[in-house]
Image (cartoon, rainbow, N blue to C red; front, side):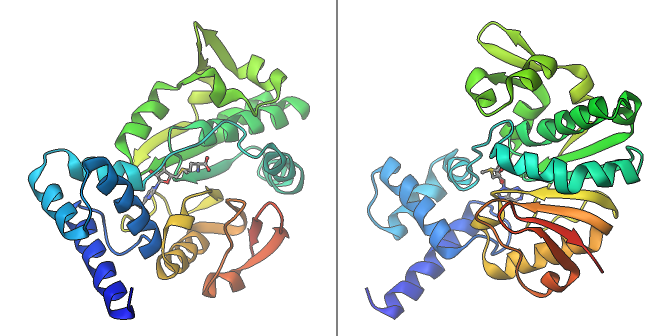
Amino acid sequence: MTALDDAGHAALARRIADAAGLMGDVYKDKCLRRRIGVRMRACGVHTLEDYLAVLQRVAGEAERLRDTLTINVTRFYRNPETWDALARSALAPLWAEREGRLTVWSAGCASGEEPYTVVMLVAEIARAAARPEWLGRLHVDATDIDRVSLERAAAARYRSDAAADMPAAVRDRYLAADGDDFVVLPAIRRPVAIRRLDLGGDPPLRARYDFILCRNVVIYFDRAMQERLFQTFADCLAPGGILLLGKVETLLGPARDRFQLVDARERIYRRTA
Ligand SMILES: C[S@@+](CC[C@H](N)C(=O)[O-])C[C@H]1O[C@@H](n2cnc3c(N)ncnc32)[C@H](O)[C@@H]1O
């Protein structure tokens, strides 16, 4: 394939993204084209032109493409070692300093396992510190672009495999078994506010957070979008606040100067300026 062909294909992929109602140019070309490829195979078409025609003709196809793009795989305590490091090196000291007043943003929270994990982690720190009342001072904004995932987050009911990475004692304390499912207990749900928010265009819900998690989300975004988003996170994190990215994601662009690395392996950063 020549460079011109490639550019032509990229432009067509962007037209398809526009036709599907995907906001801005936020997704990486490679990512966009791979996902379009998935839908092309599912629809039995062989060219981008033919897929664009399907998209314009077939009701529901735009939604199916959006679903394919916003893959929302997640789990409670995903990467348990990250949560251990976070509790030890960042969250417990911050929480003690603020006497439990902690405002958190789980950006790209998918079906909610991540924000509920934050609450469970804090509940465990409160337990260890014998300060259970601090849990009532926690607030977690859980946002995602995908409405179906957000409905699942609000229902707070999960298949047992969602809990596979959890320490058993934590699972037994904060999840109630109901048939084959687990339901998150009200004390863990209470601090979590679930809202739809497109990181590609919507402003943050509040001006000041103490802790922002954005894990396994920016890998789908192009570099310009990642840099913009990291600046936004730096702007709305309080000095001393913590940023956690996914294990294969790295803070880049001008926002790097506003953070100090706390744990390189677990992608934990502290806002400095
Ligand atoms: C792989 S999941 C990550 C879930 C969780 N953070 C974790 O690490 O387990 C990626 C999530 O990013 C969301 N997402 C993708 N593009 C987004 C956008 N433009 N704005 C907000 N969320 C987005 C998807 O809907 C999906 O739920």
